Each structure stands twice: as structure tokens, then as C-alpha cells.
Image (tube, rainbow, N blue to C red; front, side):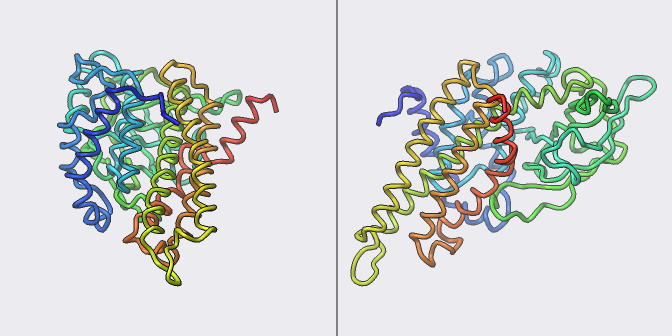
Length: 385
């Protein structure tokens, strides 16, 4: 079936992104994989290509396109080639909505031009060593100075994607204690200069997958944050996080669908060339049936993604609908990629094959952005259960 979610401009952009990946990423991707991160100068190339400024208003150096579909195209093309753009996905898909939605005009003038060019890479620090999905349990604090000129940040964060290369970090911290009525009260967001005294990047974490995206532990010891770098209103941070979760979960759903689609592409090529018992692996009925079943599941995931993209662009994607899309697409990708790896046999377990890397990369989709169990709870609540 022909997809109608993208127009001619999107498809022309797709060709540009595909050519860029083939020229700038594929030839060096193994080096990035071995190093455990994409090089910092790669992000300048993305800035030059205009990747970071698509949704940024023109007055701040962007293109002013208010649609998430452009990022979806980038996600699909990266998965198709079996590569990733390192931590840049967090820079745009997670951080930009906070800057566009809650920064003042003065802050946007200060921050967005460097955001667009790649001169300042952004990441967001929510998770702490003792809290995962329960963000209300965070212990990191930011206390306002007596003269009101700055906040003093203390605490730690973990699993921070983009944490090694980040120049600016959106940090979630407690500015007031939780109340008995609302334990989510008192959280605020700050845009922190990572070069500030007392800001420390700890271990670069050794992950199962997503090897080219730098993920780190962070520590804050009496970090001074200028009061003018508070993002939005004090103590309102948790509501901001909730408002941006639908797009984060949509991004994960798109990525999972794209990975599953790429897995079929890689596997179809492999089984067509691979010979066993004097026949190609593709000629066995089991291979045909398994790939056919995978294709049907990916077709369904594509329909879910396309509907969610349209709803998001229309401002109608609810938290429950985003949770449903994430849950369905990540579970489909889990099943499809596992079957595709099996069809590769022993070679599927070798990291030199894209399917092995996809298998490892895909696993976190059912954890970050809210676990599958949390997604089920959100959906059940929307059903009145």
C-alpha cells in the first residue's frame, strides 16, 4: 500500500538524507561503533545540512517547519542503512520541544542559533541512580541563592544519552519539597552549561546496544546556574515533562517500526544469497512463512505510526494514544528482529552483521521513554480500568 503520510517535499528530503548517510556515515560507521560514540565534528555536519533547524522558527536560524514528520524520515533512513546519528536524536526529538515550548524570547535568542548550527549540543538529564520511571522520586536539588541571582545545583543523574558531548544539559531538579497531596510538586527545569564549575561527566556507560550514542553518568557539586537559565516556571517542571512525553514515545515508536522494517530488508537480502544444503535459505518454506509473517506485522506497525504522526501534527495525539503506539511498535519490532536474526543462523550473532546490531539496539525500546509495563498502565487508565 502506498503511504500517504509523506508528501513530495518529504520524499525529496528523504533522498538528501539517504545520500548524506551513504557518503558521510556508512564508510566510517564501524569506527564509530568501535569508539563507542559518533565524533563531535559530525554534529557540525548535521547542522550544516539543516537537520537541527527544521522545526526551529526562521528568526532563530531554522526552517520553521512545525512537523515531526521530517524527524521521522531521518529515523527511517538511519534504520534502513543500519546506522544511527549518535546522541543527536535526543538533541532534536527530546530537547527542542522544551526550548520551543518554555523558553522566553530572550532565551531563544541566546540558545537556538547555536542549537541549529550544532555549536551547542543539548541533552536532558531526568533519570537518577535510585529512580527510573518514578521521576517524582528524584533527589537532585537546585536552591535559589539569597540574592536571587542564581541556583545551586547538587545531585547526580544516570543513563544520560548524549551526556558526553553535550554543551548544554536540560537538568530536572527539585526546587521545592514534594507535598503530601502531590509528590510531583517542586520539580523545575534548568538549561545548564556543562563547562560550569562542579559539573562532572562521570563514566561513559557500556551499553548492550546503541553503541554509537554516548551515554553517561553526571554529578553536580554546588553548580551555579544563573537565575535567567531557569526554563519555564519554577516548580512546574513535572507538568512540562508530561506534556512532551507523547512526542518522545512517538519517536520511539517510529524508530522501532523503522528497525523492524530494516531487519526484513537485511534478512531478505541475506537469505537470498545464503546457500544451505544446496539451496538458498530463501527457498525453504519456513523462511518464506517467517518473513511473510514479519512483513504483515511491520505493515500493521507502519499504519499505527502513520496514524500517530498525523495525529501529532494535528495536535491531537493523546498520552494514551502515544503509549499505545509505543507499546505496539516496540513489541512488533522485538518479535520481528528476533525472527530475522534466527534466519541468519550463526552469522546473525556476529556484530559485523547489521541484524546483530539491530537486535541489541532494539532491546532498550521497551524500557526507555517508559517501560512497556508503564505503557500498559497508561492505556488501562485511559480505559477507565
